[in-house]
Image (cartoon, rainbow, N blue to C red; front, side, top):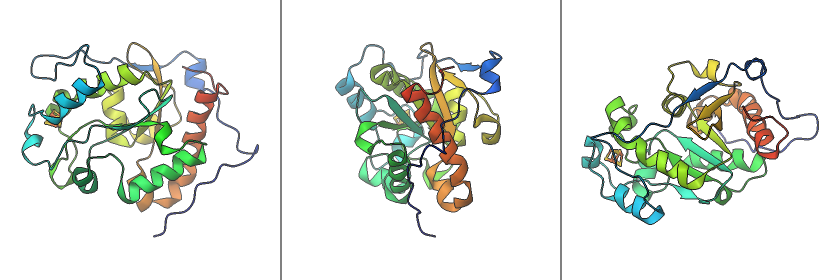
Length: 232
Ligand code: SF4
């Protein structure tokens, strides 16, 4: 299965505007939780201190099986923050999120809305690889969540892009299906940062027929970034 190029389309593919849910004020806002005992204490940490804290973290059992932590990468003042699930085998080896085939597709998706990879900030819900790429467990997410929360505080993105079910569920504190979450307005944290939910690139590699829907999601993100779409 080859990776198709993503292209920025013309005026015929106008960004989506706010949904009926937004118009009716029915928004889903998920709180950015405070650090609790047993989770990572991160308040006030700057980038280097935060990276160091992650690199030596042993708060959950995943520290025992990781090759290295995968902190995050990109522009620390990015307008768009991309959030995925957890490192896979390639990421665990290289220490960078979204490398390999899924990373290449993510790069193409970003380019399609006029963004180079270094212009966004990319991070995951978990900083260590779950064995055999299993889903993150709730206890692991609870331990690791403050790291991502602090990254969001430091980047202060205008828009967040949640890649896949696990990222969406944990950012938005919901169990709704991806089908229900896509195309709707969501916010993250006290800053009410708009969140766009779309498919994980690894899923799109397996299911290229859904790239068209992902394209609609990307247009939604671009609309929020450019102001063509109203923030929730
Ligand atoms: S996944 Fe997060 S909480 Fe668990 S050991 Fe790695 S950095 Fe620490």
